[in-house]
Image (cartoon, rainbow, N blue to C red; front, side, top):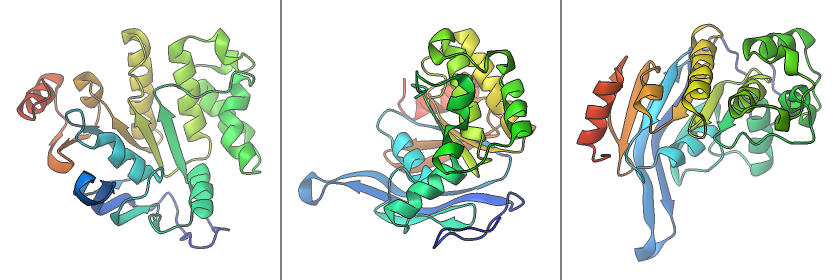
Length: 256
């Protein structure tokens, strides 16, 4: 894939290392009133991995996610996404990079009520003046179970269906990474399971790198690896853990 943006490295989805954070520090404010949200956090993720980020409230989870996705700029450290160092990009270039190469699933769905399911999914492409690939759109609609609802407006969908639209929208550009900030937090248990199954399918069958922040041990147990934060610093990890094992680790960090 040849980039048309200055400062964007050429990269492909065949690159094993998709996301790399090195010594990320994020400080809000200055002087005695400053707050260090992240203190030297770093990790590397490969293509097709499913990673959950957990920690007590105020541990820096969402800040880390936003820095990794280019929604926030670290005070110091390096963020490489799809082979591109994004932490030094200008706002204009970074905005275009996020639109083309980053998928983000918010807890609140963030769908436009005046647009249909299909139009909401295709919005990132339209904003980037890029054409829609019909076969890829059809595949995504089928994958999220909404092929028969493509012409409906968000108001005619359940919460779980709306979140599945948001996931399809995050995938439409074939991003390097799909990030989720508590993507099941506003859903009932049945809808949450459907969305969680879809995220797992996205990582394992579509080889899409997925990173989610969650408080839910059941959600985290579906991930290949769980990264734990405490007081803005890395506090260990678990691989292939059960909800009970995750709960015990969270308890040791002071969550409950």
